[in-house]
Image 1: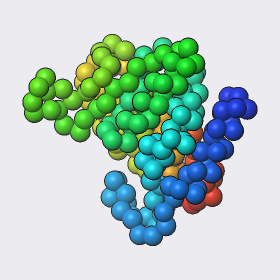
Image 2: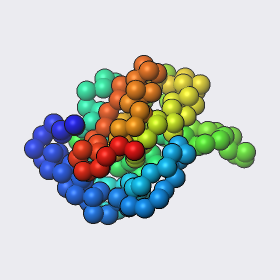
Image 3: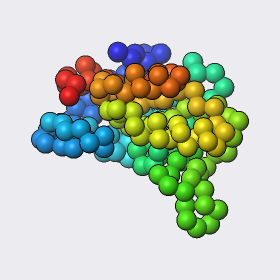
Image 4: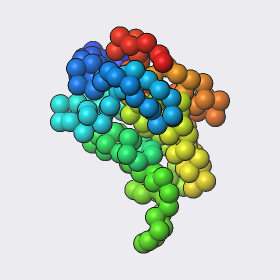
Length: 192
């Protein structure tokens, strides 16, 4: 279980856990992006795009990556990573350790410059891939593949919620550090 590095950040994390339980966990029959079936769904976009949670998410994720040396930028596969990366950018400036952000499109644009990665130039830079919640690791690994082709040095994957269903093992098998702010124990949920 993750614990933030300061009492203030841990208070942020505990408040985020409360908000997730109250506003982002839905019970029913769901199909996850991985194709797996689940009896609950953690809809983190409800909070990554919410004024009550987004600033704390930025601080919490910045804290998660504090020991990863030389991180120049954060981001991931659109749409889950976008608001998190934006929150981290703002938190990093406020903390005096600025990092930039990028967005990885699912496919290259078919117009303009035809880019698949928008925002910060990632070539030759150490980057962290973000996601809001991870089940199998498929979405962050898609982003990792695109970033590596663009010459980025991907060093870690950081998520807000780890569903504890094999993603950590897949990410680490790719030689990447795994970082998670909240897991199912924090939320009182069982892996499925």
